[in-house]
Length: 151
Image (tube, rainbow, N blue to C red; front, top):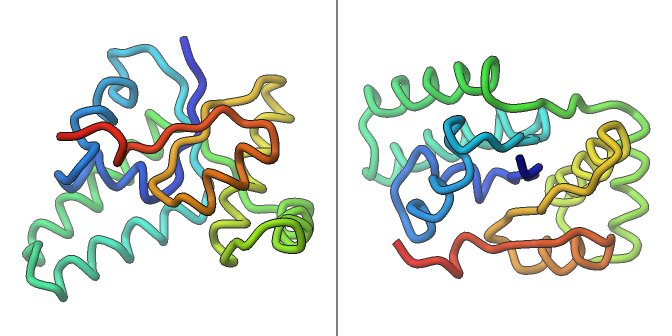
């Protein structure tokens, strides 16, 4: 069993086919026996991504509801959720001083660090964001980019 931390850009590939989707399915599906950590903020980020895709004309309203419900079911049964706490917010603010991260990216990385601390092992940090991957590597994580793995 391998431990992964999936940020929203990586997790989204499970729900909306795009570059990297096939690779993500090789480790994220429960039958592969891996543990998947996600940040609590990923819930709102992923739903936001789905509704943005609807506004852009890439998903229907029915698609959004179906994918949202599927994702929320996975949150309950398949992912280990790192709940946002004040210590994580403080850590994120420190990360922003060290790396060129946006707010939610810093929170994602701080959540990954908190999850690693609680579980006693470093997950593989998966993201399609190069700045976030560089920061994660700087914090000692092994990283992978789903966009480096074609469909």
